[in-house]
Length: 166
Image (cartoon, rainbow, N blue to C red; front, side):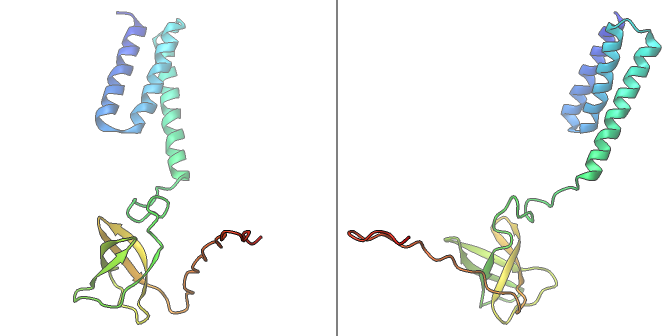
């Protein structure tokens, strides 16, 4: 078996391992093994092949680690307003059950509501959704100084015989 065959076999093994584990770093190491295989195709000796694989593999791992450090991990989907558009919405709740639970009609459906840990029920009855766990909204009271969300006025309708306002 030639050197390049061994390198490509190792690339295949590492890719299969990556599929089983889901570790992106193994893909970076597979890039190093590809560099070793290409060095073997170019006719480099075993030292050159190993050096190529080590430099490319280590460089790819270092690049990926630095990229991960620069881009922080996003919040879980249950608390991420970029994924769940309910996060940050304001709802009104007047009647709380013992244990910090309530039921509310929100977006045309009945939802269970739970106070966020460490929060007390608000006197003004307005709460901001901070997390969604299944069909339960986790809320925290709005501060009394926060303004109410502005309600959008419906667009004027054109009536027959009258042009719409400009």
